[in-house]
Length: 146
Image 1 (cartoon, one colour):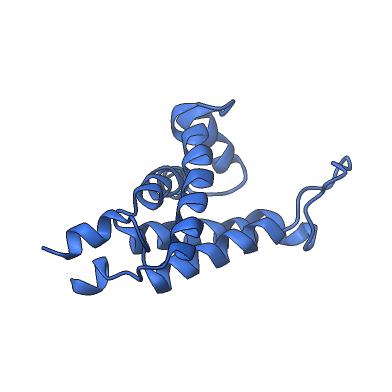
Image 2 (spheres, one colour):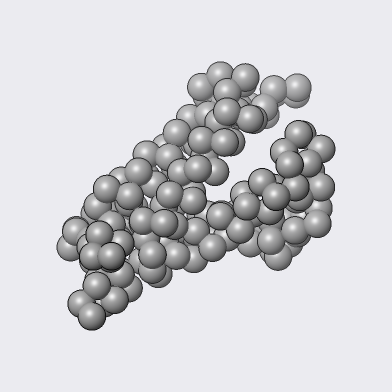
């Protein structure tokens, strides 16, 4: 289990981890708790099932984002948290964003969704955390010492 808590002492990966964690905590809190203008668990899972996701997968997406975000912020179980975020981003690219091309729809053109560029950046950040661990100030560093 040493691999689970092993981490680079890098401050750079710490910045990546915390920023990614904040982003996914906020989006997960929208989905699970209805915070920040979100629809909550019932509304979000209802939407996800309406676009063809099975209900168990819809719940996993919500909780992977929410709990993955918390884990990344704290640097607690960084690698599993980053894996959860990576899985969600791969699914989001494949299921939602790929047909819209690469670029975010900055002009908010009607009838056109966002491309996958932001999801790709989040995926890269998650993979960096998978490789390096939580970095400096990660609770994994403390737990790995025991």
